[in-house]
Image 1 (cartoon, one colour):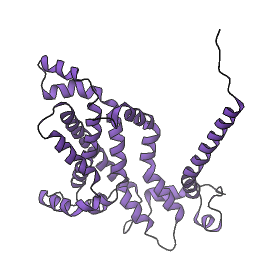
Image 2: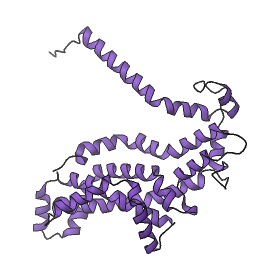
Image 3: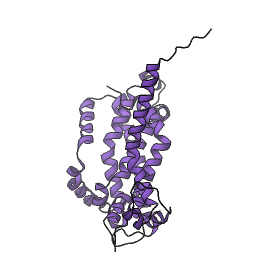
Image 4: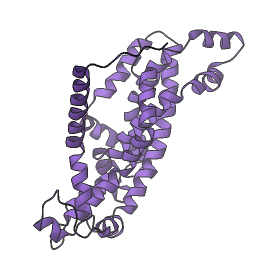
Length: 292
């Protein structure tokens, strides 16, 4: 016979109150997004004369089309589409390279302790707390010496260098929790440094790889300062184009186009968290923020 614990009226009331508070807070949090979506479907006159929270009288995707293909972003009127693909051209290699380097660094710092390793790790962590503005001039000088100034390759290098401190932290703290017996057994069998990494450690790393990729993708995609300083005219990311679009107007401010462009610029990161958010949480709980 199975006995089930009955829920008291007070417990039911508390549960209903909890859900009510959560729904209310979620509604407040999502309100700006709802306002942007609603007004991106209106024309300019309806926005100026109506309530921002009102449903569109004649919904249209004209603002989205203009934001994508014909809105003016400074001296050009090609929309944000070219800059959108510039961002992907920068984000994909930056995320892949910084993730691989972070995995390698984390593996070394967690499994192959050497004299001064803790000091090295501490100095590397210091890079997580350096403000972007502090590195602008040294980074610009370095890119000039390397011949990468005002190029996509230079901006990729900047994001790799700045992101490597975070990716190393994630992987190192994850690898600290791996059984050291695996590494010892592999060494006894004759496996070397790289073979252990590729054949044993990396196959155990999908949870933290997901965390790192989501983190780096979001950081690089949403970056504005490095993009506006180091990219050059031909490689501007979408965040810079969005700023130029919002601050460019001919004849009148088109709020619907601005909101549609902002939503388009934010769409990749929104999709990443919608479809991979649960894996992000799983990766964190698997050890991304745990370690000695």
